Length: 68
Image 1 (cartoon, helix red, strand yellow):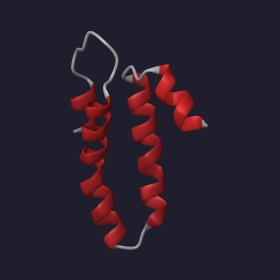
Image 2 (image 1 turned 180 degrees about the vertical axis):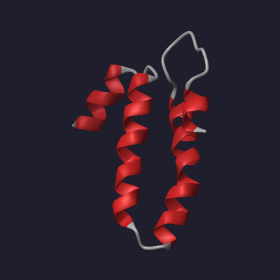
Image 3 (image 1 turned 90 degrees about the vertical axis):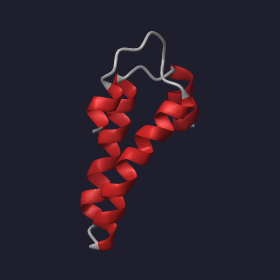
Image 4 (image 1 turned 30 degrees about the horizontal axis):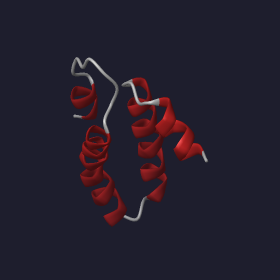
C-alpha cells in the first residue's frame, strides 16, 4: 500500500500532507504489531517508511531539519 501511494507520478516534491498520509498508512500495521508486544518488528517498519519517503522526492530541507 505504501509503495502504491508513493509510486504515483508527481511533478514536484512531497508535501507534508503526503508524508503524513504515508505515516498513517503504516500506523495500522504498526499498531497491530504493538498489540503483540513485538517492538523489534516495528523498528524494521520505520526505516522502510523513511527510505520510501526519501526516494519519493522529499525536500532536502525536511531531511536536514529531521536530522538536527
